[in-house]
Image 1 (cartoon, rainbow, N blue to C red):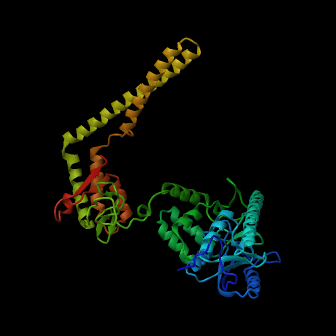
Image 2 (cartoon, one colour):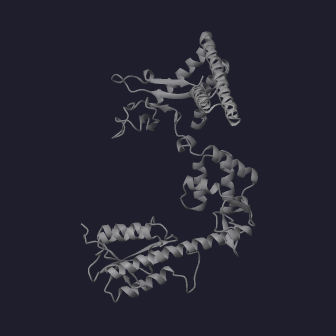
Image 3 (cartoon, rainbow, N blue to C red):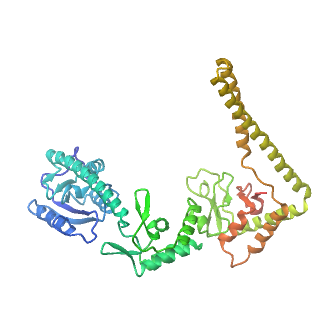
Length: 480
């Protein structure tokens, strides 16, 4: 149980155990007297700790980390050690190594103080176990934040000037920096070009990510690879603010491949990963009656919101129907639907008649909206010419607005216009689906694409009796 103290009365007069915290924003081979390297920081901290009677228990590093936020592995480790009662002091080289954000710094300071931990600086003679030390810390944090703001503005101006000269700031993956210029990495450069080509050709993003990770020798996430694909540096450009300018470095991708990749990224934006790299053939189409997408667990389907499937769920769920039996029932209903399209002429013409009536209703409502808006324009003109009394104008305008809003609302409820679909073409699409489904060479993505062409959604309802078979619970809803 960690010790509790009064507000910011953090430690006893002579704390013993300390953790040395080091932070460097960016190493990148820097040196010189003005560079506070990790070794310099640790030496100064130990020089301060020895006469103070402190005992070192850990060295915690945040290398290549900004001090503007506290989402850092090193800070997380400090929090863990403080909560476990393993340290009494967090020792830093300078306050700006701790952080350059006043609000979050003070919040963390209060959190550490509540755990019996104080902050000591090796170069600024600060000890937050005293009121004067806490006052000095607050002021120095404010100065550190101001300096960070100034550094940020300076870098922004530097980056803009470099971009105007065609010089890229930083080093994108796949390039080396030689004499302040970007040159293609002999190993990673061709790998980046190949990754663009594969993704532009339709390879799943997961496979492209695995390829890049294998070449790089380091794990990568698909989101980071997509971010890489959006970087215009690989097209030979540099970015200055919101402006993309020509760069002086060699591109790793040609214009055609770049545009193909951007088009695919735009088309897949926001799509769930299961749609981009599906692992089963009904993914994204099968739902419970509450419109929750079902998930696969082994050879069965479950509702992720179901009370019977997930502890604390809010939906009645669907139980655990067998995926293979659901697929068989879906294909059976597709075959029956195709047969109906070819044989039931009454049903076919009824659908066509409903679509034709919908077009008539839409045209009438669109005409009513246009007429109401035109009448409002004419009414405003009459008022401007002082031909319409104010009370007549107000009443007429209110009536026209009501008519326009009523017609527009009815038009919106009709939804988008749907062109009649030829029943024979729909039946042929169903036949094609039934033919390709059992082929072992066909991928899950190809099956889903063919199924979506004719099926709107697949609904599975919960069983109403013990072991009610799947074929009695599956309802396939078609587009046509």
